Image 1 (spheres, helix red, strand yellow):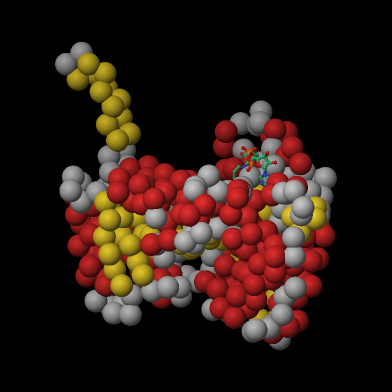
Image 2 (spheres, helix red, strand yellow):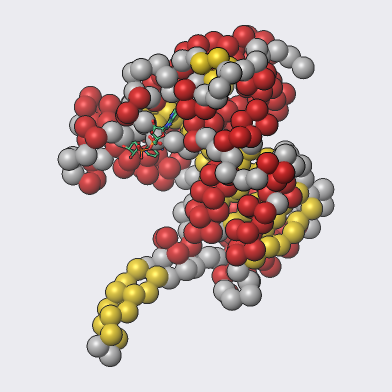
Length: 359
Ligand code: NAD
């Protein structure tokens, strides 16, 4: 298969971690007979320096013409004083809007080799943590109107939470499709005992379930879900939820896995062209030192293969190689433990590449 991948190295550790993900993709391409063509895209602080704009139209166009986008990270203190509309993060918001991605998907997975890094009790971690939160990204209360006014002399703030059935259906489909590619269990999270938007959410999810008889749908109230994520995370396969609930639950879920450098993410819309990036930022404090953990970016590339290119075997091969790397006791500084062997960013990438094999 031939695939065009837009590559945004960005700022800080972005170029270092992306380099390792590209090596891994090249190895997979050679092993499975694919061709990946990489197109460099300037976004973030480096684009401000070069073009005076965090995401010039021509750079966005390169992303839209590709089969998917792989992003390192953007931002840094050098650009703190630029006007708000010119900040590096504006490039990211423009990219998400331009690509029309309405779903953010974040896996919460604990690698047994790093179980000590989790703040949860060992007996809970030992049951396994491996689920994905599919969060609606461009609707709900964050995108409703926000007003503060005086009502009878009392300052009153109003934030409006709206969802229509089309918005719910399209994110629901991503939830069902994601579950179909994993353990075939989908938990729809809402607050239907209080909110009308949640009652509509639940109704639409159940109507959709008829189209996905192979996926088992369950419902959970968001407050219960927040408790269940720390009490019994092993029960979850895929969680689908609205914007604000997903914002909070996905941060809770990333904490229980222990390490920010290990977590990938994807953002998807109506087409198969997705945006794939680690959940961390540009880590300016360690940029250029060759000590960053590239695994979140490497696993983001694996997600791209699985969810945008339908290359499940190839994605499995990358994830197996990451497991083998950890089994062999290699660790970057952020997850270093006594008795393990410390490696830098590029050595980590090289080791993982060397461990990629066909099943
Ligand atoms: P950060 O995630 O960059 O760093 C937080 C801490 O985690 C730092 O100590 C850093 O060294 C460490 N860390 C992060 N990724 C790591 C990795 N792969 N390996 C080892 N250690 C790692 O968050 P921050 O310091 O709040 O933000 C730095 C910059 O990144 C800011 O300009 C912020 O706006 C930007 N940012 C960008 C994105 C993005 O591009 N999607 C996301 C978040 C923050």
